[in-house]
Amino acid sequence: MAITEEKVFKCDKCGNEFKDNIYLEVDVNLDGVIANGCVNGDIYKHTCPNCKEHILFLNPITYRDSKKLYIIQSGDEETLKEAKKKFKDDIKYDGYKLYGARTNTEMIERIHELEAGYDPIYCEVYKWFIGYNYENKRLDNPVLNYLNNVFIDIDVKGDLAIILETLKRDGKFDYDAVPFDRLAYEKYRSQFYERFKNVDAFTFDLFDVKNILNDKEE
Ligand SMILES: [Zn+2]
Image 1: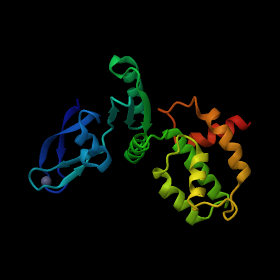
Image 2: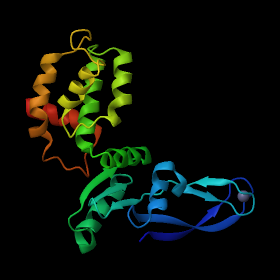
Image 3: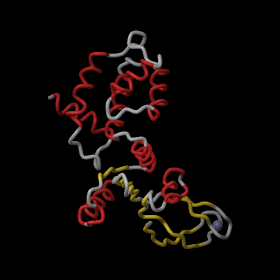
């Protein structure tokens, strides 16, 4: 059941003050439409009853899937820290895998990834890997764009190899045609799982990929 809190809003347009509920926690299985609002943004919209102006208020939210047993918590570092304590102390959250999202966009990303059966950590690792190869001119821009676009449609199951193999199978990615650091790829491919299997998904962010890889290399 969704947990809400009443909040007073002041309309920017007409100055009217009005009360509306903000959602603090939703379970996608019990509150489907509301939970969907985390993705389309409706959940953060509050409409002034006087002039119908929408006010956008991006409050932190706990997005829960009580069947797949995961929680995505949005919010800044402080909010995430508090939330982690709450999840640990409350028996209601036992057995859930926790994912943090520092922005609402990141929360949407996490939802998509988990719904599609991806491991968000590997998604971040993958993105880092693509970015790394791009920065080092090993992938040209059209290939990078293509990889990012098709990424969500491919069942990666946490393995970068499957993405690249699928692209290759579909004729979308050719090792020989694309300047690509194959050695780096092989190296990371075999090490990714080992390196990231114990990472805390709740505090993990994209910058951690680089740090974790660097730490282990030193
Ligand atoms: Zn108004």
